[in-house]
Structures are given as structure tokens and as C-alpha cells.
Image 1: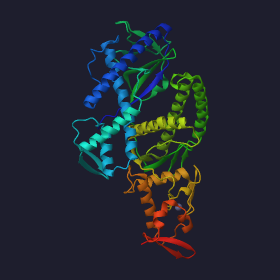
Image 2: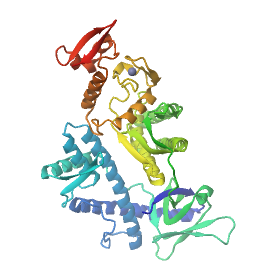
Image 3: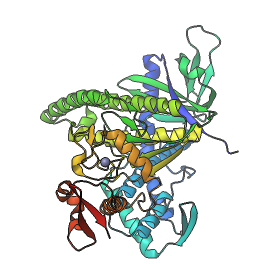
Length: 497
Ligand SMILES: [Zn+2]
């Protein structure tokens, strides 16, 4: 069995005096400068070899940090750059999804992207799984070039990590935590090297009782930050995988804002979510207006940063809490979820941007950790038109969705919560052969409308008047194409030949 590695960070109350804070701050300043220099070296390495390398020699690099500090710093820089790359990967997928390229080219580009192989020199054969079969494919030069062009395009657009405000992630080369046996006032010491050789300082810590109680093992790895004159210390723990016996094969989750989650089983979870966001949105918007007047960049404003932090914490807490509850309730073997997109008409543009930036990442991280912790399989499906399709009869119509919460089918009359309806559609998408994750929206619509018409050969159908006014069915209603209209009782119905 492979060993699972899940790590969590926990903040520990710390009590340094002013002098110690100053010393750590001096290190931090130099550390950030060094990180920026290392980042430059790493990017050069990336474009040359296709990879970042956390083992590069840094002897030549000028810095008042010790060699050990530099190495520690390099590990962190590479970690952050890898994180940045995974955001680029996400955006890459998004772009590919929205192009008119063929299914095959999309598959190839996505495979190159998921292997981070844009600049690889050795890439020849790639493979992917389709309905359980391993498919091998030789990548052409043109495809690789295309992937590279798209990658560069994203890189030019996206701001790279600046390392100007990072905290320090220190390993045992430069910092260590020891139990305090002498004094009763504190539980631990953080011993941390400074810019003066051989003169480490000790920072007293108190235990985080929650973290101490979590089953697992502390790593010799610490996060240290000085912000607005305050020092903070975080310890890191590796947690063991939990025993998990699934009860149901799957649940499907629709992601929204009000409520946050709905399941195919009818759960509506996180109903006060939107209210909180609207509230916070108002505050952020007001603060922004103030900053704009004063000509201050939001990133330089403490209050603005605090509001954004509050948003992130809120999202993290809510998403984690609710997903945990769902797992506890159903114990699914797999979770079916759409390709994510958080957005709400009730919110400002800025808030929507913040949401899509944090929300997606937090949900993804949480799902990843559920996968790690419990071995729950996560399946993404194509969400196109899932909010307009009736999960009961399959009729698809913009007018089916009366509001963000109400769904009433124009054809069969089914009334249901709109998000629960979507979740049910997501579940059935999983077994719809023709609709793949990257099938373009237009094509999804064609498949859905066609399927609806085929299904109801000779059965009750939407009244013709309803269909007539539905632009989605325009092509099919064109007389003589492939549809005949019959009179059947009092209702005109449709049938396919
Ligand atoms: Zn219906």
C-alpha cells in the first residue's frame, strides 16, 4: 500500500518580545529578497528544461542568508511556483474547453497540460483513459507548439508570484520546535536562526489544543510571518488516512450560492451563504470606492486585505463544514460534480471575481483532501444546460427555470428546487456516453434536444405551442427536416421518423 501524505497547518499562540520580532523581521526582509532572486533563476530553468528544480545550487546567489536558509527558501519558492502552474493549468483547461477544436485535439492538449509538458523535449506518446480503456497517442509537433502558445498566452496575462509578501516556510535546517520543560508559562520554544551566525533566538509558544489532539505526526517544518508588527507561527502536521466504508455508490452535488450545495437527493445546504456574501460584498465595494478616491491600491490597504481574508476564511469554513456533513450523512463511494463555476447575479463584479478565484480553489482542495483522506472518487461532468433540463422528462427550455431556486417544467409540469434538479442532471450526465467533459455547449444542446424528441415518439409531449416558442427546438420544427407533427387527441404531439 502506498503511504498517504496529508498535511495540515495550525497556528500556535506565540509570545516574542519586540527585539525578537525585529530580528525575525530582518530575516524575513532578506528572505523575501532572496526568494525573488531565486524565482528569477527558477523561471530561467523552467523555460530551459520544462521543470522547476528545488535542488539548484545557489552558492553564486548573493544574500546575507546562510546557505541553509537559501536552500530552505528555494524549496518554498518552487512550491509556490508549482502552485502557480496549477492555476495556469486550470485556466488552460478552461480555454481549451471553450474552443472549437476537435475532441481529439482537445484531449491531446489537455493531456499535455496535465503532464505540465508544454516545454518538454522528450514528450512523444501520451495516453488517457476513455470509458476504462487506455488510449495511446503520438503527439505531433504542431500540437505541442499549440499547447506552448496557449501556455505562453496565459503566462503573459497572469501575474506571476512576486514573493514580496510571503511568509517563511522553514525546515529543520534553520528552525526547530522543542518542548519546554522548564517554565510553566509556555509549552514549546521555536528556535530560529537569524542573520547573525550562531545566534539563534527562542520564541515561546503555547499549545494549540486542537492541533495537539489531531491524530498524526508533527513535521519539522514551520511557517513564520511578521505582519503589521505581529509575529505568527504555524506548525505542520501529517495526518493519517481514515478508515472509510462507503454506503451509497454516489451522490451528485450542484454548486450554487443560495444554497451553496444541493444534492440529487434533495438536500439544500448552506442557505445563509449568499446573505453573508452580499453583506461582505457591500463592505468591500464601499472600501474600494474609498480607496479609489484616495488613489490607494487595494493590495496596500490593511482594511481591504482584512475583508478579503475574512471572505477566504468564510468560504473555507463553510465549504469544509458542509462537505464534511454530506460525507458523514451519505458515505458515498464517489462524488459527481460539475466543472466548477461560482457566480451570482446578486453580487458585484469584484465579488464574483474573488469568489471564482477562491471558491473554485477551496472546493477543489477540499475534494482533493476527501480523495486523499477517504479514497472517495471525484468525477467531474459537463454542466452545460443542466440547469435548464428537466430531470424528470428531459425537456430542455430556458423558461423551465423560473428563478434561481424554482424549477417548473413547461412540458411535464414537474416542480422541483432548481439546484436539486441540476444535481440530478449531473448524475445522469455521468452515464451519458455522448456528452463528455469537454463537449462544447452547442453540441450538448443538440444531443439533449434530439434525445428528448426521440424519447417521446408517440408519447405525451410538450404542447406544440411550448415547443414552437422554444428556440432550442427551432431546427427540428422546420417542416420536412426529420420531424412530423401529428394531431393526437387534443394535443398536437411530435414524433420522429
Ligand atoms: Zn419535465
